[in-house]
Image 1 (cartoon, rainbow, N blue to C red):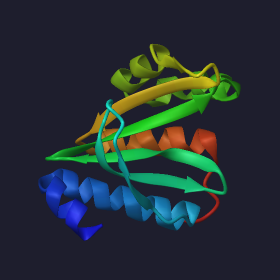
Image 2 (cartoon, rainbow, N blue to C red):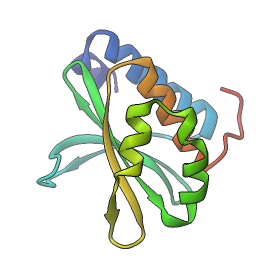
Image 3 (tube, rainbow, N blue to C red):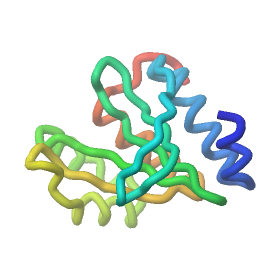
Image 4 (cartoon, rainbow, N blue to C red):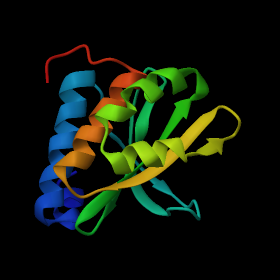
Length: 134
């Protein structure tokens, strides 16, 4: 994890570490490092999941990182309700999200500032409300 943080570098490295720390403390999960040969985003990534619940896959990049998340259509009413609390860019991204194998919406977005981290935390809370102090 330290090598990934060093690879990202700069302010985004601090955002990466704060997000990983938040997810570990808040959801008591252990990030899982995997390698994907997927043509959409090949390379090393970090899966955040616990008890079968996926909180997204993080893709380290130079000076930023990307997140891919899938939201079940059952969560759509809750996501629609929180859209005003998200940044306008994230709200638009969710509204225009594509279908993921007929089970939900999928979005991929880049995080390179604190607003992106906060948007991610709000969306994760839709999937599973936090149970532990952060």
